[in-house]
Length: 170
Image 1 (cartoon, one colour):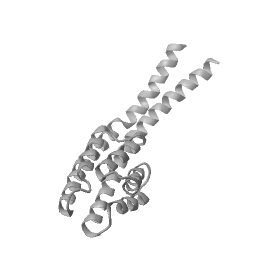
Image 2: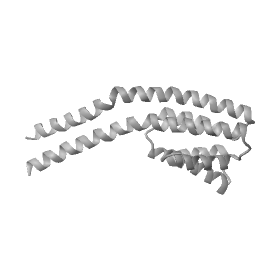
Image 3: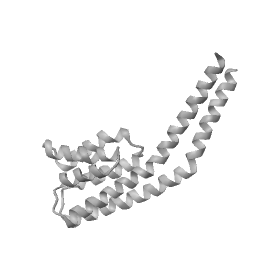
Image 4: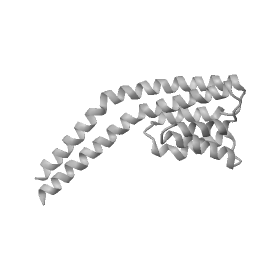
């Protein structure tokens, strides 16, 4: 019975470390997907005459989860409610946020972007998207650095912590 408990503790500690490491790996990918989506949105605004809700719907079809949910919800809220673009973006971000591996710094960047989306002419919208893209690029570089630095360490420390607990219990 003790061995089963020890194995359960080791498995749980390894699983916790693997999940934390996965979040570190997912963060730069999700930032990259958001950057790609915003670049596509910029192209739609500058070179197409597609309405904002239609552009968001198209983006949601091309992106992987959970990022696709942001644009799908945004499109749905723009068409089915009386919310303006700012409130629809904020609500969509709140719905999608718990499913992501993104940090609070990315949330503030995306909320700042939402303050201006759909309010200005094409050139100002393009400038706002470019500013957001630059901020997200810096965050992606930071996330990638953290991933390289801490990914393996978290898995190892969690397993070692599990071993320590098992040794203390026996």
